[in-house]
Image (cartoon, rainbow, N blue to C red; front, side):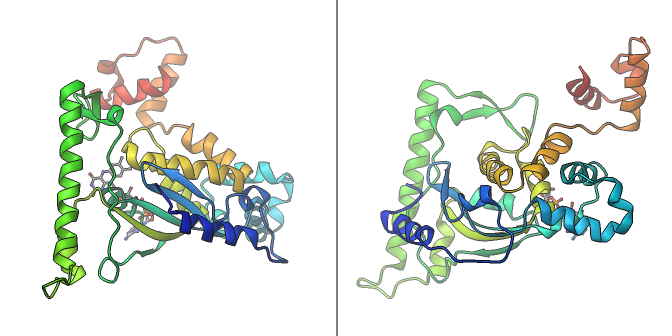
Length: 301
Ligand SMILES: Cc1cc2nc3c(=O)[nH]c(=O)nc-3n(C[C@H](O)[C@H](O)[C@H](O)COP(=O)(O)OP(=O)(O)OC[C@H]3O[C@@H](n4cnc5c(N)ncnc54)[C@H](O)[C@@H]3O)c2cc1C
């Protein structure tokens, strides 16, 4: 359960209120405000606030370009131009503030994105909820044979069941001990800041995370990518849906140039030219390593 009925009622109340404003609003984003989008078994992302829309990007770009940008009259065309040429600061004019509930091991990956503002739930001050991420059986997979940083085939039958049982039992036992340590019944009760240290990395934490659109795109490019771990990728994918509704033109350019596009090395460009000229290029004649060649063929093959 990502939300308790009380938490849902609080959100409903907030969604029932509206305020008049002179600021630009994005209709696609208004429908997401405060709403919790479930992710994994107990997690969610929800938009707490945002600033700007597609027009905020082009407005800022036209100021910084002065007269020079007048030729790019169409907003969508200008946004695509900015994205194509890595002119990133206009995208920083849009901001988003999120409330995210996520397992600690996912938070450890997420927090590596330093260009955001974060405030996390304090397990020194508050007692953590008994909520652990337990993967769906289909998501339990063996170590990949080709990628040291990934998973391969799904675990089968008894092995999958054994792993699930261990994950559940260990989480339950660790939380039972956590509760017992902080309890003040018949004992002093260990401080929360110490008792939390026995909790496993699949326990859920929460934070508010504020980031500008440029750095959010950077996050999404890395974390909505097939190479990202599934458990963070599903958060990135939920965010992609929200950003698409918020700034459709900017998201469209991002999807085209970054998510759907590819970057080639100098050797890659040269090989492509030789291939287009009719030459049969192989890994041996490409000047690329096996890994580079595999990735290159993944793009052009
Ligand atoms: C598939 C994948 C696997 C990964 N594996 C590992 C791993 O095994 N081990 C590990 O430790 N990490 C790993 N990471 C994390 C990765 O190395 C980055 O830390 C993370 O993706 C954040 O990227 P970033 O630094 O570009 O983002 P941000 O911190 O948001 O920074 C954005 C950009 O700002 C600039 N910037 C920010 N801070 C500084 C700074 N202090 N100095 C200079 N420039 C700065 C850089 O240009 C940076 O690209 C992995 C990430 C991915 C996506």
